[in-house]
Amino acid sequence: MLKRRDVLRLGATGAFGLALTNVGKAMAGATGPNASSPPTADAELDRLTTAGLRALPPLQPADSVSRSGQTKRFTLALAAATVEPLPKHRVPVHAVNGASPGPILRASEGDELEITVVNRLPKATSIHWHGIPIPFTMDGSGSFSQQAIRPDETFVYRFVAPQAGTYMYHSHLHELEFASVSGMFIVDPQVDGREPRYASDIPIFIGSIPWEKARTAEAQAILADGMLMTDMAAKPGADPLPGIGDSMDRMDMVEYWCFNGKTFPATQPIAVRSGDLVRVRFGNLTNMAHPIHLHGHWFRVIAQDGSPLDRPQIMNTVPVQPGQTIDIDFLANNPGVWPLHCHIIAHMVDNHDVMSGLMTVVQYDGFGLPAMMQG
Ligand SMILES: [Cu+2]
Image 1 (cartoon, rainbow, N blue to C red):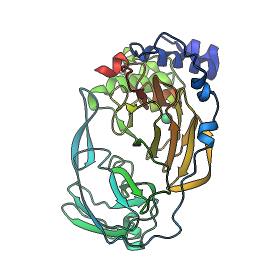
Image 2 (cartoon, helix red, strand yellow; image 1 turned 180 degrees about the vertical axis):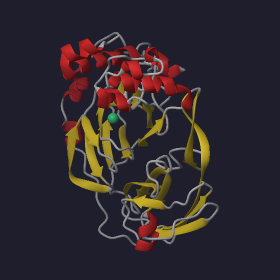
Image 3 (cartoon, rainbow, N blue to C red; image 1 turned 90 degrees about the horizontal axis):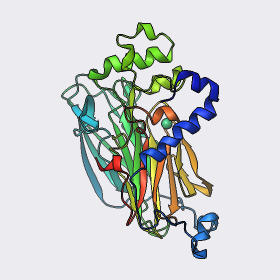
Image 4 (cartoon, rainbow, N blue to C red; image 1 turned 90 degrees about the vertical axis):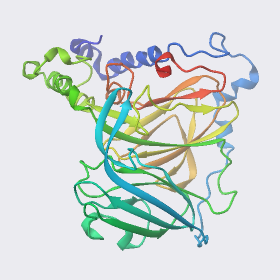
């Protein structure tokens, strides 16, 4: 166990390195055909350059959007619900159709959208279509553009799907309290050929859910320990990871940091086959930036906030800022079970399990999941 004095002695970088050795522990049990033999075939050395990624075309933005003649109808029912970011940890939240994040809304460019929002929450709210340029009265920005939807009232949003890209939606009143009323909104191109053909296209919504009430003593202990006021904690010994991180880090540790509403190891693995071209879409509606890192691969950053980048950047760690969407793609050319995670320790240690939080794995066909993901 890392102690505070160790953190001080090591400094941030050293402590970080130690915490990251826990990635190795979390991966224990992952097995596959190449688990014990280093790869040697020359063809496999392709992974050591970015040539494959540089040869891919960028996404092409739409020059114009014309009506598709299709209407897509969705109903979003906002109501209290209980979610389970980790098995047996049940937290009451404000939800969309019983879940948080809510359903992924998917349409094509030029589709007419008719989205019925039913408010069964105790407070008035509205739904904002984040990043989508639409008529002002449909923007859902609380009292700026419309009368809030009162409890037991319904409002129908109508607008045309914009250029292809990754967007989000969220409640726009009482934002902290209603942060869980949110989800992703994906628009596909109306014509083929503007995007590479992806073997899989994975949306990852980054959110956070406060710990359940049953963990109050533990949360107090963590926060008190972070502020060196251990005596003030009702149960000082309740801190499961005493001494990791500074006080700001520790404030972050009392949330379940979630990919698609689940915290590691309950997150969904990304299943790939060798040779796949894989797209991942991140949307971040937390109040923190999350530097998302993929092991074993470079990736291209191909779009930001729904807009394709003319010259995709090749990286292996990309910050996803609050309110931002980032699309990446990568070539599956390095078989294994590879962590994909936020590189801020406090967003990976939000539970008794040292590895948790904003993390999942890219799992190649033929490779088993790490033991802790097998539940
Ligand atoms: Cu993070």
